[in-house]
Length: 305
Ligand SMILES: Nc1ncnc2c1ncn2[C@@H]1O[C@H](COP(=O)(O)OP(=O)(O)OP(=O)(O)O)[C@@H](O)[C@H]1O
Ligand SMILES: [Mg+2]
Image (cartoon, rainbow, N blue to C red; front, side, top):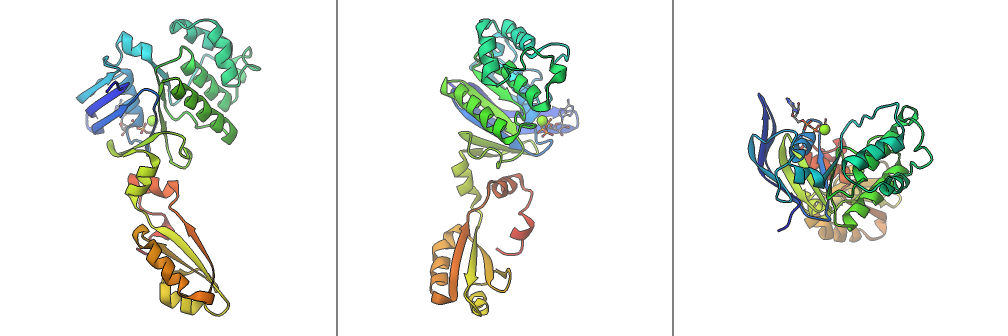
């Protein structure tokens, strides 16, 4: 396979600290992958290895067949670091122009990229006057210029409001449509809302999940929340039959394994007019993320099976 990133059994130790253990992951051309994990899980370390800033203490990484950090690899990879810093005295346009030159991109790309990230109006102002979100978008412009084959974005959406975030994912989707790969790190599944093709989750330096969101949902096999509203005076009977916990004088809630969903529903429907309404809620993305990150269930998911 012609993968852009091929990482095999990668380990990274910093003296006593083990940042990554036996991580194997591939990213194909045109694929968007989200790398998730708690603080210190190893996300930035993996980026630094892919960039060739540091060398793995175990395993191998190649970028389209090249050694990370080598000239051909550097021509492919663009990077938006976690804490993006620019010289405050320069304007946005000057900064993007600088990166365009560095990457050998045509000068007219500068204007196009500034338009893409919605910074044209502020392009000739000094970066010192930019808001946090504007600096983040300038960081994205710097990464987009030169049409990279691989975009590495370390927590790119922190500091972006929901509209900018939406726009940001449209831009990465554009890159992917043109055959570029995107690997971006983030802290939670809920912010992604199925915007990437695949999700990889690191926990204490180990890759504990790697697959499309739908597959992770299935793999996690978390219970469905069923809420039953009983008709007047019937809540005790409903509770006696289906169990769970009583929310108030009319409603009962239970967590039901996916495999028992139909059986539970038929039990509820056997209650006939004693039930007024039923709501079912599948596990949220946050719950799935907590499952793989081993953070334990949400407090109200703990009481029952
Ligand atoms: N140069 C270094 N020297 C020693 N330890 C390091 C070094 N770089 C990273 N680490 C350690 O490696 C582990 C992984 O760090 P990393 O920065 O990759 O985490 P992260 O997933 O990016 O976290 P965050 O979400 O906070 O950015 C941490 O325990 C960190 O302290
Ligand atoms: Mg980090």
